Length: 267
Image 1 (cartoon, rainbow, N blue to C red):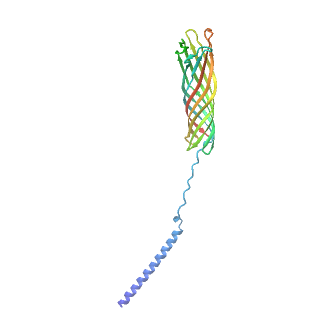
Image 2 (image 1 turned 60 degrees about the vertical axis):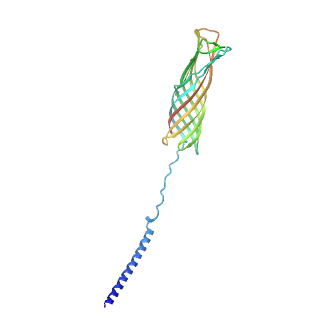
Image 3 (image 1 turned 90 degrees about the horizontal axis):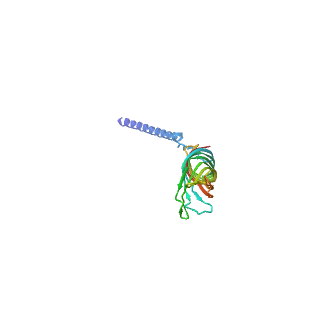
């Protein structure tokens, strides 16, 4: 009797275990299949990152600029047909600030940028010099030789060309220039003077280099160096207050080096 009971109990346990195992297998299969169909198990698509548009230098621009300049106003004295003076030249050095505005247009192809740039600058560059150490034929000249020069304003129109990379524009520039120049020179003896006073509008040329960058897509900055050359001029100093029969030719040059910085707006 006991053996039968034990056998029946054992058989029932085996049936329960087999049933449980079969159910677990079915459950795992269903879970696995469900996981395969669940969208969250699929790898997410990569996020699309929008590229920031590259800054281009093409367009019209204008701005304001200020700087400092210095130059050379060498003035040479000579008596026509007479013995040359030695050294014969006094050399005023002009110095002063500049203030003005600029504008232009750029064209860009790839990294290459070119365009036209113009500026109008008001100037405080001036200087003077004198000497009483001249000789003529080895004999000291009893006179004082003096010269002064002032640049009232200047303006340039230039071509520009260079490379625009990483939001920076490196360029070279060259073109024509015009300036308003006040020049005075004199030879003063104990009794007579030979003055020259001229206010001229002079034309010349200019060349330089520069760098532009940007604060934003509209606001830009620049640093620029220009050399300006307006050649030479000559005038004759007549004797005053009375005629001595002698005149003095006075020849002067005007060159400037200007370093400036500015802020502009590009459209």
